[in-house]
View (tube, rainbow over the protein chains, first blue to last red):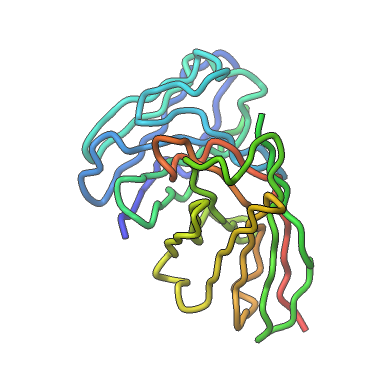
Length: 107
Length: 121
């Protein structure tokens, strides 16, 4: 299986801050990388697919980049409603695998 | 807008079989083009993909669970189901059903709300 490693595992930031999360794949996955947001007690929500494509209806402050093994997820200006855990997920190979998550908190 | 809803027992005894059903509304499984997945999340942990089924009935299971998993589809009821046999406490998790994008079955665009299954005697 392809291993996905996210960093940091937790992050505290202030409203308005630019927030960046990284995700590294154990092998080249091209751009087959998705990002999800999960709020407590809720199902994950797809935010970005194919590394950089914003899902319909997702605010433009969310963005993603990268290819190969190294990927970045950015929130350009943190809002209170962005408090959640974020997961990357590869789908280059079956089985699809997820990163361990990054828990984002408000400072 | 497609919606998914998991249902099934919240408590299963060790060594028994966990059975869950996902009911789909707002779209027909038999219309084709989509893969229907089960994903689980151990308490306080990350996400693990269990497997998926295509409307035709073809399946793919995570090798880590393959020997214990069966996913089936009932197009007449617009449902798909998960059976996980010989469960242990390690199978305690929130179980989600999900639908992928038409172009890529493992980009999980739509999710059910999840159902907690506890394995305990």
